[in-house]
Amino acid sequence: MKPVVRSTKTGTNEMDGFFRQARRRLAAVWGIRQEDATTHGGKRRRFMSAVWWNGLLSSITFRLSILFALTTVLLLASIGAYLYRFLDVELMQRDHAELVGKVELFRHHLAAVNSLSQIVAAPNEFRDAIIGHPHLRLALLDEAGNVLLSSADWRPGAEILKALVAEGAAPGGITIRMPTLGDPYHTVAAWGALGGNTGERALIVLSLDSREALELLANYRRALFAAMLFGGLAAAVLGFLTARNSLRPLRQMAETASDISASRLDRRLEVANAPQELKALAAAFNAMLGRLRDSFSRLSDFSSDLAHELRTPINNLMGQTQVVLSRARSAEEYRAVLESNQEEYERLARMIGDMLFLAKADNAQAPLHAEEIDLRAELDKVAEFYEVLADEAGLKIVCAGEGRVAADHILAQRAIANLLSNAIRHTPPSGVIRASIAATADAVELRISNPGPGIPPEHLERVFDRFYQVDGARERSDAGTGLGLAIVKSIMRLHGGDATVASELGRLTTFTLRFPAGGGRA
Image (cartoon, rainbow, N blue to C red):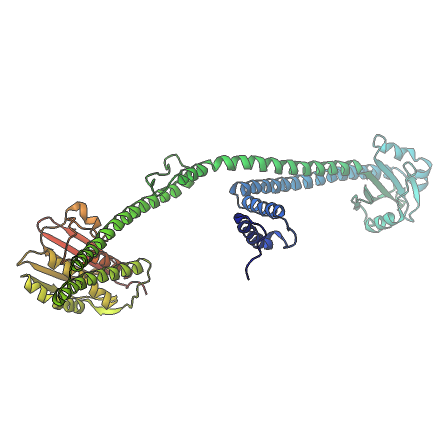
């Protein structure tokens, strides 16, 4: 079904479709429903909001800022919790020490009293002991729980007294009740024996108002929360500024990289002044740029060479056809032209086939049926095939050595054939082409050497390039497609090996095929 056109402008429908697709993709993340944005303005606002949040959440600077803030909050919270606990315990211990000291004081006073009636008759002697302590309350009780005296008409609660009497029954023991939210008093109770060996005793109950300490702790908590809040915000801001400043070299590298194009591959990232963490990245990026520049250079040369190679047979075909069509010809003349054209067609077919093989090999799509083969047997088969051609050129092929490798025997034969064909073409008459196999610790090497003019050193690195010619000659009616050595290199890479060349001018040129001991790609 065709979409409904809602506008006469060409770009409007495309923009609508773009925002519809973007909204569908972002709906799962941002909860954008289809009916939430029916106008273009709503679509754009929601889309830009989603893009902004996605960009913010994926920002390293934002993540580092949040991480700094969280770290600061957790650190302040941990330190604050420790100090809060320390202050709480310290205040309680001080109150407890004061109360225990007062208990001992009242025990001393009780030892000077012979009966409980004396306590009731002279209460001021005991009350004077808490003068100057407005937050301290005192009560003395007999064993029946009757209050003998108390400060400021204070009467301990029945539940508290019951618990204190039960817990403080042991002679000399002290019972403690810590302050709570409902009861902010720190209370201790202890029995004190009267003097005169009467066996009577009184329960000393001291209660200290801890509301000031609790208020101090509450103020401390509020200050701690405020410090955590402002500390987290300050850490976020400082972390943002620090991260932004620290990532400035990365932004500079990005700016430099944005200026690099196919025509400006000579630009490089600065490594010397880069941070230590980014030096490896900058060096790797520069190395990649170097490889890209070489690849672009090779691609440009390849395109030029390919055009030149295709132009020669096509020009031959066009020229012969134009000549034949210039006037009427006999059947024999037409047949001769067609036979000549057939040779050019075959040359084009070989070139296209070789280029197709190289393209598949570059993408690891060329079929490779690796199996253990006798490399010497494959070498002998190819050498026997080229013996007739070598005899016609007055050459001799000598094979030596043994070795077994894991390889595709058809591709191995093709690589050997390309090297032998190349050697025959560049060996002077009466020359001897030597092919030898030698095994090393991790590979099996096949070397093919031939005498001849040799390859200049400046051409050695490019002899395996496609269409590359050392002498620059291209009008070769009897030559191959110019892709033979490139195919050899690709075949060896498919096997996980390599092909190399070494040459001495005016003496020997040696091509080496290195098959890995463990085989190549499965």
